[in-house]
Length: 424
Length: 96
Image (cartoon, rainbow over the protein chains, first blue to last red):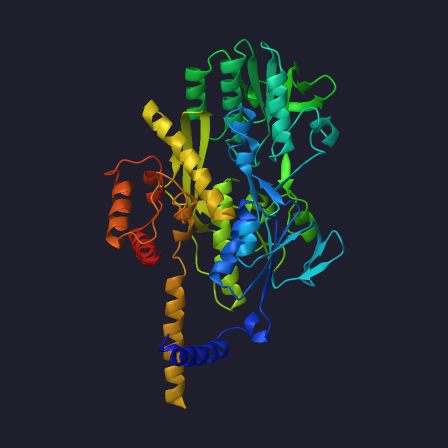
């Protein structure tokens, strides 16, 4: 580049001018700023890469306990026998190739005052900005009888991996004519339409392979995401096979007996051949240790920067965050990650983050060739992320089957696209 | 001295403008959740990088008004103002 030296000099002057005019940024203190990201899912891996892209001078460390990431979106298709788990799995090679230090470790503590993260082996990593993307933890104390030992018999399959395969194997081993029972939790929880997509794809499996069987969904709620679309599709595709029991009709599961595979409600007992308990959840463990989770178990954040409302210099993104009207989805996590990355890059150089606009698009499969969606656009309003009035909504209720088929194709395309952006 | 500072501030704002235009405007970064950033991904959803600015603007406006049929873009386009659409389109047009 011919004008290189001249441009460099100009920028030098500009840098000198900006340090004089702006609050002292991290760069002014000499060393490259350090960002630590905890959690290598759709939120964390996206954010780590987006920070490097926004400003390659930032030293980014991604802390993740697993060498392979197993994605939850489309894991219901694995349970329904439509897809293999390997199609859900990704490594961190490309993430590391971006110049991100990927540490295979568990973060056990955060010292918000000293600004350091402690790993399981005692290593302390200092940071200028910390991004927590820990996803969810199961509330093992919330549902009597449903603890980690019980989950080995009655899978939750709400973190994809071995639990996903366990539920699939149980369905495959079940005799035709068996009763499958799913329990869905109260809000908020990861992937609001997830339990109903799962019910749909299990119903599809039963209809195809074990048609004398029955599926009951016991729900701790009276309403759910994409409800009219799901219920219309169930009436069309799985009449007499799939029954949804809302809270007001006795759907709330109050205890679980793992030994007899029985789900107990206020109204009765449901002894199942195969049961799937989707239990109450909270932000991943490190959120509590960092002091960024409130009494709800989730993490309040600033809607512009995703910085914690409880601890300075710590940002929380993805399922762990209380993101106002945004649902806990992989798309939302990725959108939040990019917004947070831009804000972190600005803050590290002493700049002011600009007001963001975020999107969520979330597909569900009711059958392999029957997709439905919900979409939303979000912006900060009154300290929260609110849906932009007039935007968003679900697929039309009266759409022809060709539209449902098109949305099933788009659902798969979405997964390929987002997986490639985050891990490819 | 006064002149030098004025020049420095002038250059600083040019530099700031250059940095700002490299950063995606509000909403733009979210598009790649569905519109592939990579050329290696096979999808019926088009890549936006390098598309004609006016074409993106027209598509968004037509999705928003319902003039152009879509599955989700009508619902998403309704969340953006004309100014936001212009900024997003201008940014994607310069991307490769």
